[in-house]
Structure formats: structure tokens, C-alpha cells
Length: 207
Picture 1 (cartoon, rainbow, N blue to C red):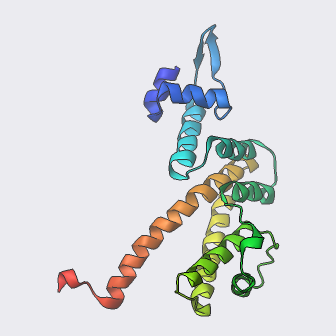
Picture 2 (cartoon, rainbow, N blue to C red):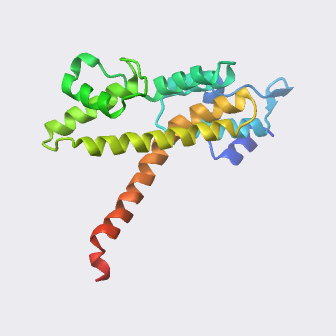
């Protein structure tokens, strides 16, 4: 297909596709004439992936490039996860965190073997710290249940990765799943909160 057809197939403007090509996010098409190239289904998938990472995942073009480079490399699964997490995680300066918040998080994730500079650990500590500053406190059982839920989701992620055949397919699932998985979990949490609230307290609109 020509670039105009690729645009119609993906919904991405031609100018956007050309931008992806210039930035190295999308591989060049097969030359069919001096100023013309043809594109295939792999290009369709890649454009959809790029738009998902940028539009849904909120990644910058530079971060999207890092993610795609990880997909196209021959890195082991563990390293691909590290790159994906580093790309999507905000880097928190540990010096800005209260020691008590870090201790609270470490207690909840005891046994996970996280490094001191683990981005998830630091981000969680900052959330706990700000939660307390907002006057909410943090009940140990509340945080522990969050940690349990996170472990369940992590196992589900790995099961999905293992369902893919080949390192490239697994790497693609890792990086895309890490980015979009955050958005998915947040969305499902909203629905679960609404459903649980009605079950626990009833629905006044139906009374």
C-alpha cells in the first residue's frame, strides 16, 4: 500500500506518518519508484502501536523511540522490562522522600528484593508521603492490599508475555503492556471502585 493508503488504514495523517519515518519510529517502506514506497501490514501495526504509546500511554516521541528500540533489539526479557519501566516511570529523587514513607513501602513489599533506586519503590514512597501530608494517613493493611494487587497484576503481565512466541514478540508485549497496562489498571480500578461502593453502601438512585 502507498503512504496515503497507510494513512487511511491507520487514521494517522500522512504528515504524521512522515514524521514517524523521519524520527526512526517507523521503518522505511519498500521502494517501488524513485519517490514512492510501499508499506505492509507490519507498518499498519507499528503505526497503531506508536499512536497507542503516545496517545494512550502519554509517552514523548523520544521515549517512544526508546521503547521501540528495545522491541527491535535482542535483549533478554529482564532487560526489556528494565527499559520499559525506566521509560514510563518518573524519576524520583530519594533525597526528597521521608525515611518513614520509604520504611512503610519497604514493609509492604518485603520479600520483593527491590533495589534501593527501584523507580516503583521511590514513586510509591512519594505517594505515601503526600497521602500523609494531605491528612489521610496510611493504614498498613491498606498498603499491603495494594501490594498484593500489584503482585497479581505483575503475574498476569508475565503470563501474557509467556504466551507470545519468540523474543521479539515477547519484548513487544513487555514494553507495550507496561505502558498501556498502567492506563488499563487505572481504568479498571475506577470501575471496581464504583461497583464495590454500590455493593457496600447501596445505590441511592435506585431506592
